[in-house]
Length: 411
Ligand code: ASP
Ligand code: MG
Image (cartoon, rainbow, N blue to C red; front, side, top):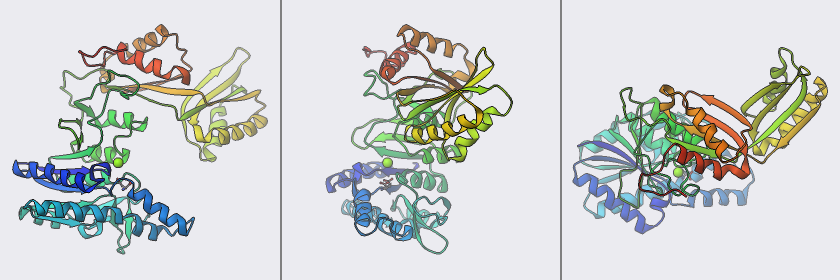
């Protein structure tokens, strides 16, 4: 018998039929003898609909009232799911975030959880009840309703699992787990049975949209075993856990993350003297632009060039900043290129293996793909390439590192 916290997302509770199906699923766990605490999202589309309603009244509605409004979506689904469980003969109790007492700070629409009172939930569990909690919300010390940011129900689930020291936190969604890479790009992409928190953060921050990043960070910090699985298909999904030191079968590369969200900027002909990177990137930072991959080169004439990537939405803004820095420093040119893509190999196994980068560069060379920038960390190697070759690169790397199922032919 274990204590499981399960979270069902918007599509999983998108219709009455689906809510009934979720109830059936929960019944299955209860039959096995597990204790279950359930967190639900609003029915799919509902949060957006509510935001739309507010927008019809005011372009900038009060943050406090906005949270009162958008938190209602989850109040609907906790009640409906509890009714569906009761209809099946199970005692169930629904709670809003503030009824549980999920205490947050007062930053409306992006509140942080400070404390969770587990007493009520524990009492209900001891009486054999299923506890159904509204995701995405809490309340501050003055009782104001707060919300945790879009996708925040994942974080609610992980936080409850931590507070209850649950055996596992299961996130039910419309995909059946985390994949070696996007299956729309590589046909042979394989579902991972297991991945570490660190790897998941690298995969997620680079564009896999399976889980809210904050929820993964939270789970890593409080060591909550987290499992992503499908609400519609049977299967064991992907378990996200801590890295085991003695894990002999640890793969060197777990997955390939990529995105097209960035743009590359280059400033050329700047003096090669101490403090120059700080002059350039300091100005970019002061404009509140986040910089990702950075490369500096020194030319034969002893001038330097600095290349870095920023989010594509901020390319023009960054270009303006560079133009004015260029004037101050007497730089020769400023270039901007939006047609780049970032591809990263991710794997904790890289810590103990040499030669991964060489294999990566070799695979790219074989496909005649030029590498524009390289950056590495302990568990990741990132390259920036021409956007046109993104798919080719991801497929080539997927096969070079033999990430596909043994029985899948890669194309
Ligand atoms: N309903 C909220 C949203 O759409 C929270 C969630 O689904 O996690 O962002
Ligand atoms: Mg979600």
